[in-house]
Image 1 (cartoon, each protein chain N blue to C red):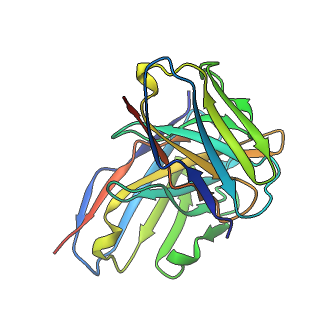
Image 2: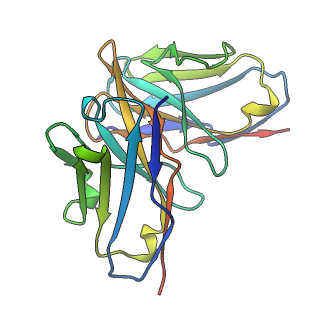
Length: 121
Length: 107
């Protein structure tokens, strides 16, 4: 079955960077887009961007342009999301989500378990 | 960006009640609309995609309808395990966007 295993919780100081990993198994990693979604404490879901694991092409939400970098290592079926110049309001759970495709429709059918990133001085 | 607006933001219901949540898109998105359920401390779970197609393994008491700008998620008979927060999400274009969520609580 599909599994997305994310790296562990992080505590960072303001201004630092964080890199979260998402190791995929149970499917062909390069066949499906991988997205990153975050959720601040008590808040809703916020889309950050996506990567095409086959080509490495990325699309980022305008809010994160210049601060986020999404990469992948196809040899180990792992996607990465790096967020720089962290601020306290970047404190959130960060999820990777595989985007399935069927009948021309896209949807997030598998999610990682989430990685809590805490930004605090 | 396409704005997704859910209503209500929260609701209280009894076990066995029929519950309906609505989602409105700021522009037509055809049927490119998905619904997710999220329980505290857990990742979201896909319930319905393409506005009305039930994801494999999801109980048939969940159903979705709509097209264009207006969509609904219905739970025909609320069960104890259905108390959660529900999100709609459009997959019509990038950036993907979510509704703000609807929290379903026990009355």
